[in-house]
Amino acid sequence: MLNAYVVNNVWFYALGIPALLLTSLSKGGFGLGLGVVAVPLMALVLPVPQVVTILLPMLCITDLIALWQYRGKWSWPLLRLAIPAALVGIGIGTLAIHHLDEAWLRLAVGLISVDFVRRRWWSPRRIALDTAPHNEAAPRVRPVSCLFWGATSGFTSFMANAGEPALTMYLLPFRLSNSRFAGTTAAFFAVVNLTKLMSFSMLGLFTRTTLLTSLLLTPIAVLGTYAGIRLNRRLNATLFHQLSCAILLVIGVRLIYTSLKVIV
Image (cartoon, rainbow, N blue to C red; front, side):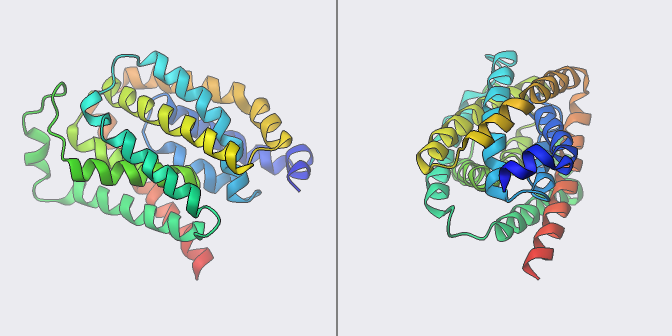
């Protein structure tokens, strides 16, 4: 089945290449959240578990590129609790992968994404929050929030490659600079995806065909990552955060729509 799609079905590449470009642009730091649309697009021609399995090796490569480009620019205070929480989320995903309906997971991520944008754009406190003093070097981390969003990101990343909205919702209130935002994201997902790689291997999800497909599409992922890095450097900080919220809104609505079609 997978061989037929990969080798003979042009729709796999027609949808997969744009999806991969969106994912790799996001990995490069341009508009955090773009990567979450890759799975729904590619899932039009392949089951979600196979899509996630094909994407994962490429994500690990693009993570390493982004990690090198933004080396030393991540915020360790924001990561020291979020990463262990994400590993817990991955562990839960490993146990639940064969039992949880993926449509309900996409619906939950979509609702949370839309609600976050609503609160950021229309809350009466938004202006006060945006103009408050902020120290990137010593952000005021709330442990409960950190643990919740870290675990949610790890879990949703494992189940449907949808970990970016949860991490975005955790990081955006700190109003990090473009490079620190991208560096923190790169460090987080480098650990998450390498851990997923080990979990997927233990679960026996990789096949010769999925690995060859990943290898074939890797040059596109690398080019997209470098394009995202260049775009990140040229973006105004305010525009970057507004763009991230806009992307989250579009993704959230899309996730809700596609999930409800399956559930209803």
